[in-house]
Image (cartoon, rainbow, N blue to C red; front, side):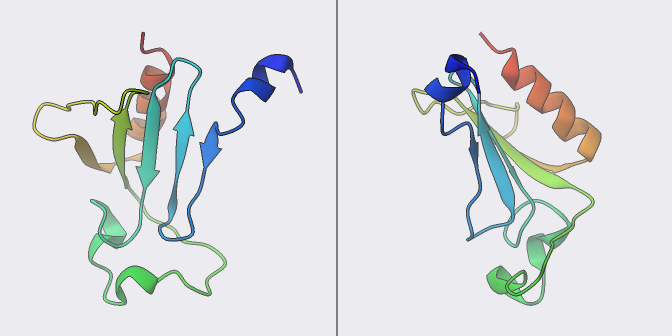
Length: 103
């Protein structure tokens, strides 16, 4: 592991409360990718509610919700909201690349 990697030990984050993950880049920007109940995605209105994924080995969704913010806590505005829902895997990958390169 390089010294550069050691400086940012919180680069990836997962929370048990919701299916998804968060990545924080060296530039100070963070992207959240969530695909659980209450998110703008296939699972958003799951009939079992927030606990629909408890006891499962995996959770799947054809799309996900993303949100982006900087180290000052300022949220990225997608034009209509600070959350962008129903993103395909390709869109999520594109946004991860964009956020990684934000100045």
